[in-house]
Length: 452
Ligand SMILES: Cc1cc2nc3c(=O)[nH]c(=O)nc-3n(C[C@H](O)[C@H](O)[C@H](O)COP(=O)(O)OP(=O)(O)OC[C@H]3O[C@@H](n4cnc5c(N)ncnc54)[C@H](O)[C@@H]3O)c2cc1C
Image 1 (cartoon, rainbow, N blue to C red):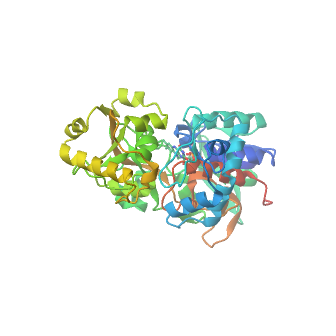
Image 2 (cartoon, helix red, strand yellow):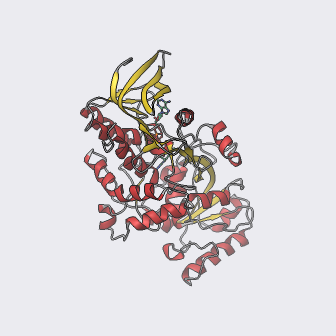
Image 3 (cartoon, helix red, strand yellow):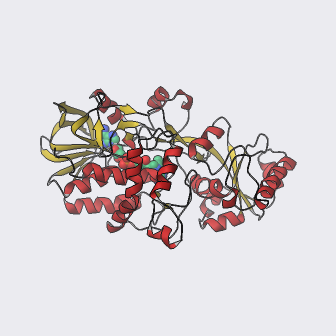
């Protein structure tokens, strides 16, 4: 254990936000340390899909998708209920392509595809080679290590000393219960993730979400939010807790289901309430709209046809093999399988298809120009439920990633980035925006723009 040592920059958390911050900090400060309570790097970033929303990427340009910083900014603000800090949103949208190019320079590789998620106006989500956060963490840890960033694993931050508005020490405990103090010469960067696995905190801030399971690692406990608040930091938007409306009730955690429900069925298919065989929401709306609509149902049924799966380019064979996704040659089989009135289900799908063909307006204001009729069997179905996925609230920061105190000032040398912060996403985070946020704000937190 690196006890009683002095570091120029101490970063708490080794997810994408912490790694981005540490890598940037290393070009300005000789001694940079990342403290991580788990045995390896990555946190939730590691188990994520690694999807990243980018404006003006080479892939978007090649596929001739018109996009702009203003459009992404507008999408984020709209989904966020305009409760986001516009300066943060603008900063992240403006720097998304730079951040993406930066990851490529570190060795992150991407698939040649671009996906649509609800609430975005255009396709702008890029996927790393193996559709996994590992595709980021592995090269970023390697890059950081080669630069000389030091890592302290199995070590939990318990306390921070703040004197005269400056963080001077962190108090840590190793797995073997050794306690020690690490001194901070210049800067503390908090990148400790969200609190989606802390049921007590979830209930405290939003009692409507009790008893929902989470897609996150058990370590997403939010203890740094509690600690920083006790030290005078302002927390904001803590009640804004995101549920992912695309999880399978038959799987634990995130599971395989989101590949079908989030990447294919919500953008291109439909959701049905099995109680009445009716659609009930704009399936292409942002996660909060969809999740709020389905949260009181035991489950909703996501349906696509074969064309939609083929068009998506995703391989769902494993999901079918594990019976997360079921296949049916006929709509009457689906009706029987899920206890629905077959005539009603056919009528719902006929009406939907006719509206698409007639270019009519959808009852739920879905953009029917972006979808095709469901006509080509086999049909694919998946039960979907909402699971707690992301916490939008957290430590208040400004666009320089400085932590704001309860009296509206900034700590002199405390910065924060990633899911532990609040103010970026407002009431609803758009799909694939978290990693963009971590990269952009993490880099800013590590940069030497303010002397401290
Ligand atoms: C299954 C899943 C899939 C997702 N897919 C996507 C996606 O495709 N695209 C997207 O944009 N977003 C996605 N998200 C959300 C996104 O992954 C997270 O919001 C993001 O990775 C958070 O990164 P972070 O660096 O802020 O925190 P994390 O990656 O969670 O890292 C925080 C680290 O801090 C450590 N830590 C916490 N407290 C302490 C302490 N007291 N002492 C020491 N260390 C501590 C934790 O152990 C953790 O390793 C997904 C989330 C999940 C759960």
